[in-house]
Length: 82
Image (cartoon, rainbow, N blue to C red):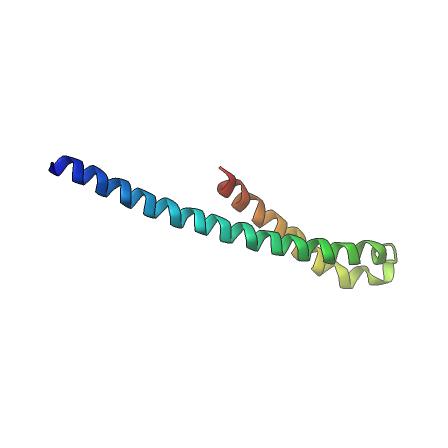
């Protein structure tokens, strides 16, 4: 009797934890989608101007930031997918 109730309790705890784990994953995925959209918007603005070398010094920090964000997001996405 006690053993069965312990098993049920463990199952309830596991369901509770897995539910929150899923919630956190979904939150990160939505945040990533939002950032990805912003990054694609910025890069679509950069590419046409990039041919003009006058703008290069001003755009370099921005492109560097975008590359850094993409590099940091990749391991996070790999963790969340697996």
